Image 1 (cartoon, helix red, strand yellow):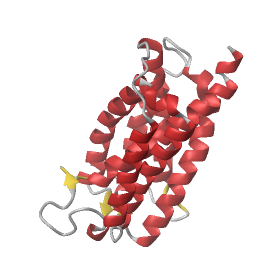
Image 2 (cartoon, one colour):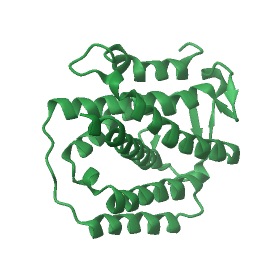
Image 3 (cartoon, rainbow, N blue to C red):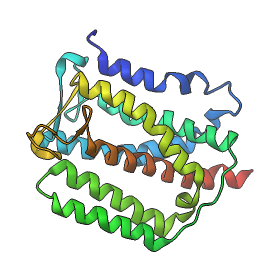
Image 4 (cartoon, helix red, strand yellow):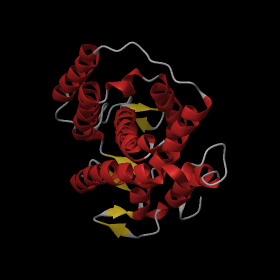
Length: 235
């Protein structure tokens, strides 16, 4: 493949949402303000995480797939990832809102807090694996905050549809990132270590699924908060 592999993947992630931003069943561009707030707040948090673990050596990026421009030690393609992913995934969510009538699901705060506790326990058990503990704690933090501050999100059937549908392109694109070894992982930071299993789904570390889940959930939670303040109240 050609030199700009990671940049091409970024472009492919955003291509169709960008194509339909101004002409679709709904006007996606009208949601840009809360979307930008979500990208700024959540994206910046995950970029800081990314900078720290890249510096620590939990993962790295192969130069042959990059254009060679870096910011704070991260390739520009990686920083763009935290922009194109929420842009595309929130577009998926807004399609669900437009085309599928939402339904409230049963909710029990203590159930989700128990799940958070399980994630914390797993993180502590695997505390010597840097990526494992951080991915577990990020999921725990989401469930704690969502169950206490934004329970309507967990009650929403469309939220869970959003997660399921967003995981489809995640698996596809992450497979290319990990199979081409655009992104490499320190075996000591993930499940499986140097063993034959190597803690992966095909070529994708299992930690990536939890990382992605928490990231997508935080993007949506912050987006919905600002959407409710800036857009919904005006309607």
